[in-house]
Image 1: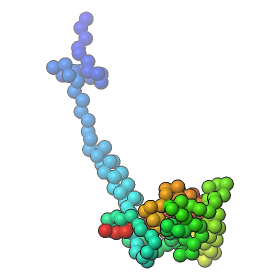
Image 2 (image 1 turned 45 degrees about the vertical axis):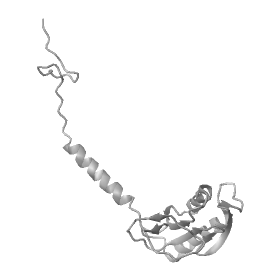
Image 3 (image 1 turned 90 degrees about the horizontal axis):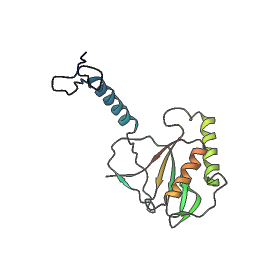
Image 4 (image 1 turned 60 degrees about the vertical axis):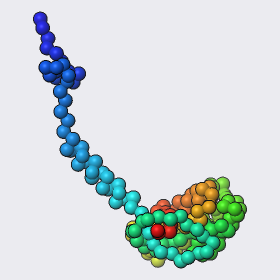
Length: 168
């Protein structure tokens, strides 16, 4: 009793003994190109012009997309500011003021919560830019300070945070 050669995929092997496998990649390429398009559209960087602050040196970028103005948090060499009002002290790139038991900056948290409540009362908490913050951090700022600002903003309900850079 003789059995013919079988390929590793269960079909008959070709005359040379190598398996014949045909893959149609057209559907896979369609899916991947759609996925790539939506990822690029979702993560497109947006930019806006902000007033120049001599004590703040932002990193540079080549993004060309515009952004609507929104609440701005600035981390300078000396302080953390919301709308140019200092709320916490920074020295040598590190946070001087203590944080609470949740890792939040208390003065910043209180200001962001009151701002969010004010926006909710006035009906400004709707739309794609609602709950958004533009974060301007000096490029010499320690990442731990930025992390605490992000944690504080997220705890206050601001989940859409964008980083500001200088356009080239």
